[in-house]
Image (cartoon, rainbow, N blue to C red; front, side, top):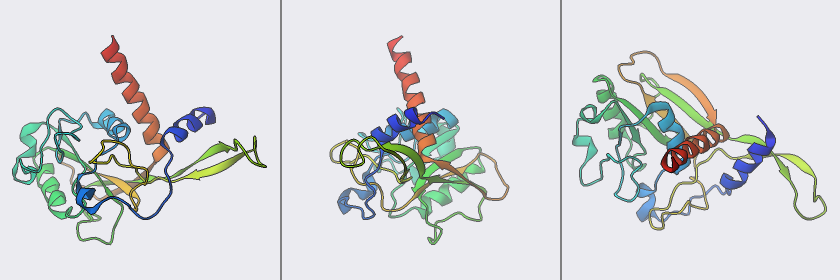
Amino acid sequence: MKYSKQNEITEAFMANHQQRSKTNKRYRDHTSTPQWLYAALNERHDFDIDLAATDKSAKHTQYFTKRQNALKKAWHQYGDAGWLNPPYSHILPWVERALSEQQKGFTTVFLVPMDASTEWWPGNQPCIIEEITGYYTDFTYKSGKQKGQTIKKWCSGRIEFVDARTGKVMKDPLNKPCCLITFPAHYQGDTIRTSVSKFELMLQGEIALNKQHSKRAA
């Protein structure tokens, strides 16, 4: 992969590597998935519904809000695959429901914190756990004594969500690494563990968004 392209994408999406979340507690369960990340995953799965959204944050034209209570819905009646960025304060019932829907032929893709110490963690369930990792990129100093010098710079794999209050990408990323957990329809095998770099997802997302813009312009 050419570093010039990598630098371009990194500059647009690079995290402020602060470890502590500054998100107002009132809004933490209502932050939205960045569009580039959803676009990348929608290319893989062709989602039919956003399972946990608000009227402002919904990533698909078909979606469930808190008022509609997705946990009481039959997801498989709304399509074959669903996107799920659940309330992080209470993930367990969403995992349990995804396992139930999996047996009925429905695929659920989660974006959640990478935290195997929790009760909800599906480490022994029929799913695919995909850790979102950081990556190296070329960084060129634009000022100071090192101006013009290029070094390898590590970029965090942590995700900057969209602020529920402003609709803008938040300056500080989530204070934990994230992962994608997929419960493929009818899958009954062992847990599969893999990884993908944030850069790969950003590139895939950029390509998918450009494709969407081209279709609209045609």
